Length: 201
Image 1 (cartoon, helix red, strand yellow):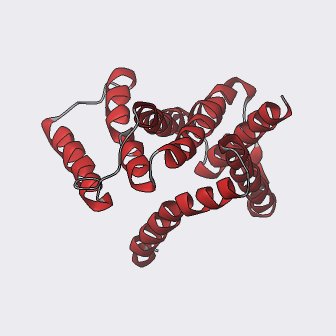
Image 2 (cartoon, helix red, strand yellow; image 1 turned 60 degrees about the vertical axis):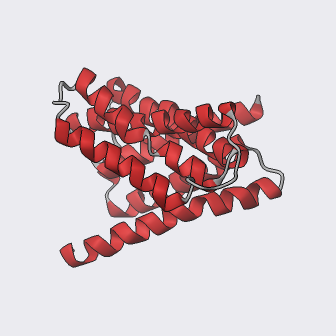
């Protein structure tokens, strides 16, 4: 498994990076940002449900008093973050949206300091700055002729904040002893139900 780890990380990066291409295609077909979020959430939920049904049904069990964790990962994170990210892609560019999304680690560091009392070290701060600068250079924003709108930047930062919330609420769920598969399933369960309500409205 350790030998596969690096390859899986690279594959995850490729799949993540290609998401913007599909978003643009869906937009061309007349789908809005919330429609795309709903498609992603419902598809993921169905696949995870079938997988857990055969893999380990016990992972589908949760306590109602812990539902807030999954509402946090599903609504406050996935729905909000995906909506903002997809909007940012259409309002700016793939590269700008990606860089703004990666403001998420900064939000995670601040929230972890406030909620979990984690140390805010100099090393962490330097790593954070270098990561962000690296994203800027890789995406080629510096030296490009594209113009950026204030609204697009704000929505992109909103995507970063929403993305950060997944780590925060996910940590609460992990502390309560839930498996990562359980967290993922109920995250997209809450997400798909909320998206469906919005679309009906």
